[in-house]
Length: 269
Image 1 (cartoon, rainbow, N blue to C red):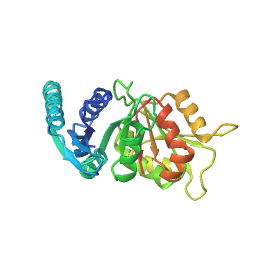
Image 2 (cartoon, rainbow, N blue to C red; image 1 turned 90 degrees about the vertical axis):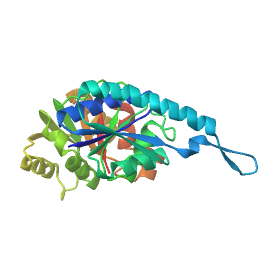
Image 3 (tube, rainbow, N blue to C red; image 1 turned 120 degrees about the horizontal axis):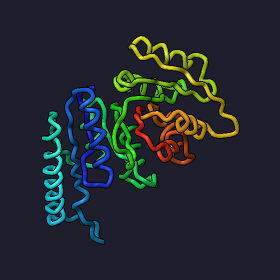
Image 4 (tube, one colour; image 1 turned 135 degrees about the horizontal axis):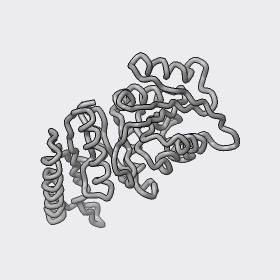
């Protein structure tokens, strides 16, 4: 994992995801790219007749804020002594992050504190990028202070998304001291959890398997309980295995865990 990308911005979550990005870049001796979206719709006003007007003052003010952000972060990274670059993208935030991630190993983003799912923020933004990108997203809670590599948990259900998460998360898993694959009850016989453990072992990752009974709780509640009991530093899981729109309407494992987990989550679709 050499190309580490982070969503840059002046929002409340940036400092926590920057710290995680620094931890990853340092751990893998990689290169950090700060992705700075410039959404043009933020500087356009619409009148009652359907006309659109560019607001130059708003654009100039935003540019000054972006320059202040660059200067502050550059000072931090000079002390860290690692290679970095800035990449500006015009367009929506989702398009900027998806396009930037094409040749990235991971995109680091933030989860909002309340997980309200407001468009363009937190879980909603993470969901849009994960489902549109082929690059994994590391979703970081606002409360996260650093990225540790002592214990990792994999949420496994035998699906394509879970397999993609394991493959794309292999560098992180290989750098972690202890790995546990958690499965709630049984996945389909043709893709048993032992296959995931075998795959990891071929890459030098010895993972233990924990098959837990669902009982009277939902799958997501049981996974959350297992995570809190074992206390991993991060979770690896497939995203939106039952379809994004179905989960958006009815809830789902991904949506629930992103709002409750409290640790970084590596997501792949």
